[in-house]
Image (cartoon, rainbow, N blue to C red; front, side, top):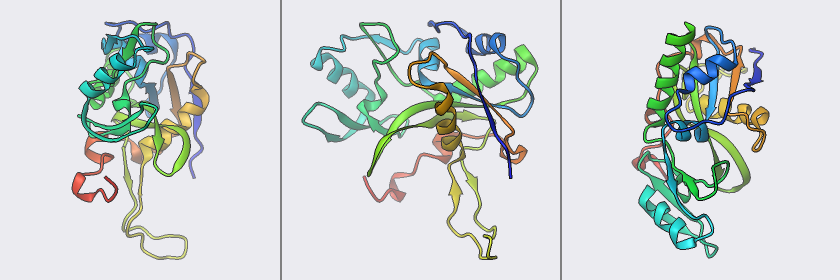
Length: 233
């Protein structure tokens, strides 16, 4: 059984458009080969310039941005919240448009391709610090049928998004036929416990990850359920 350690990365300055996240992270923490780095979507979106002007108090302005970021609206609430599918295939509130932890008058959009964002950070850390790590880009999602929020992976590189246990046996020797573990989501959720929502910690280092989990990966290819397999939309 693995023992995991989660270490918040303190000392990263406010991220601005054009910043190289790999450089900021490498300057703030010492990484080892085999670590997994979880980075918040907000930090990635800021660095990639995914900020747009918007008055968060103007319902019409908010609705226009959400519509622009949606490919399909699944539900609307009387209070104005929209459950939408994004071009990435994510189903989430307000198409991932977020007004928290950004300057007044701006909204943060999801990265265009969070898997690519994770690869860019991973490649940058290899070039800057000479370490081979896994990278997860995390964001906060709600869940059907359950209250509360949790962080999930919206992009990853170098660490499995899903660990397939089918074909292995359980403690009683029975073959597992359907067990696929959403590893990147689990690591993202665990990392959020030490990030907090208002502590200004945009990254967490996870140490002790099983080496077999470290491989080429993609959230969109592994975690996003194909429409023909989705029983609930």
